[in-house]
Amino acid sequence: MTEPVRVGVVGCGAISAAYFKMAKHFPVLEMAGCADLDVDRAKARAEEFGVPKACAVDELLADPDIEIILNLTVPKAHAPVALRALECGKHTFAEKPLAVNREEGRRVLHNAAGNLRVGCAPDTFLGAGVQTARKLVDEGAIGRPVAFTAFMLGRGHESWHPSPEFYYEAGGGPMFDMGPYYLTALLNLLGPVKRITGAATVAIPERTITSQPKYGKKIQVETPDHICGTLEFENGAVGTLMTSFAVLHAAYDRAFPITLYGADGALKVPDPNGFDGAVQLRRTGDEEWEEQPHAFVKGYGRSVGLADMAQAIRSGRAHRCSAEQAFTVLDLMQGFQDASDTGRAYTPALPYERPAPMPAGLPFGILDE
Image (cartoon, rainbow, N blue to C red; front, side, top):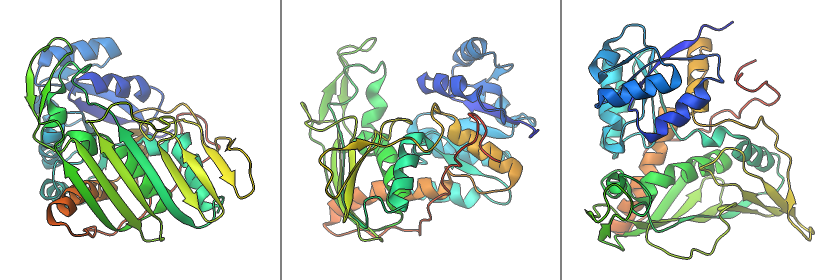
């Protein structure tokens, strides 16, 4: 049996609960400690999920028994915490995005030297929904991919999130918040991007929080809250990605926010912010859309990417939620803003290679043969 990899969590906010709940289903993971700037919050999470150690961040980073630092801090802290973990000789896996700009992202890549691994969310593309869609595309179910549309449209977070300020700071906004899910899915479905264009704006410069406990507080929006981009993939597919925190009554199918159009059919792809949504196919001559059976195990949630990296550390193979993939996503997100600012198309900074598909037929929680 593979020896579990000991994981220490930095950042015990809301998303940490999803990781702790799912991690227990993977024998390769041992959640060995947690830390937060607020040590009492770390202690509360440790008690809730039976984690043996709760402490300050520096103590967790210095613990020689911790192998992976799971970085669940706010976006602007992702790169600094990753760099500190690497300096301490530990692998690191972060929530998205990898960093808030390319320069920080490059530093993380540069410092991942030797045997140290860097992983980054999202891992939703490892779920049965996107993996089944990828299998259909790769098998030629829609023929040559020609076009796509992808939408993530809403009004923002200040009406429901208890602390929504960071969604409107550098590293936030609809593209940096939700774009990683959509871009990672598109990269896995269609492969590398050739070039992009974009337009971005701050549509609502000031927001008012209407949720508790900060009801009435004003937020000055520091990053675009509406972005529209066009992507041309190396395989010839050209389409549009629109992300917004500034619209009402968005008229699109939220169950299938991505649609791929090919020479021989079309494919409805489920919400890439989830793992197991339905996939629908309509080929030439079909009168109706037909739901496709999932080709991969269902039920995964946040932690599957972490578990995949832990398994890869033990076996020596490549992990799927790689820093290189996360940097490509970061590069594209910033590229939309660059294209908007300059009025010129942007070419990705680094080549991209799709990760291997998930293995089919393995029991839930087991990621290698």
